[in-house]
Length: 131
Image (cartoon, rainbow, N blue to C red; front, top):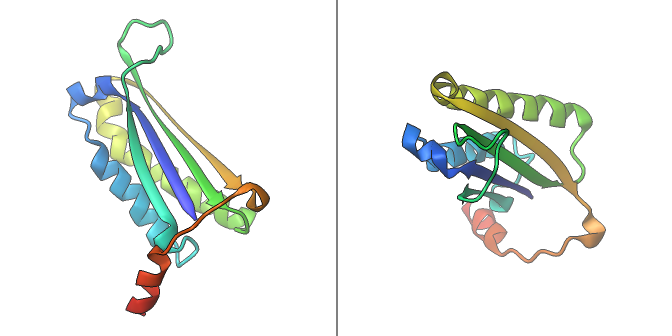
C-alpha cells in the first residue's frame, strides 16, 4: 500500500500548473521502487484547494502539499533514500513554478497502523493474472 494525496492551491492554474503530470510522476516513482510498493496498492490523487490562507493572505503565495501513507515494514534506509529522491523529483518538476512565483512545497510520510487499517482490494488479482 502506498497512497499519496497532493493538495494544491487553485491559484497555480493561472501559471499553467497541471496536476496530472505530477500525479503520474509520483505513481511512476512508486511503481519503479523494485516492487517495494505493489502496483495494485498504489493510489495517487490530487485535491485542488479553493479555500485557504497562506502567509499574510495577499493571494500571491501558493502551495503544494504531498501526504503519503504506506503500510509498515519498509526499512528506515529505504524510506529515507526513496522519499529524498521523490522529493527531489517533485522539486525539479515544480522548478518552473518556483522561478515564476512564491510557492511552498511540503511532503509528509506516514505509516499505517495495521491494527487499525481495513482494506479490501481485488485489483491485486489482475496483476497476478499478468504474471
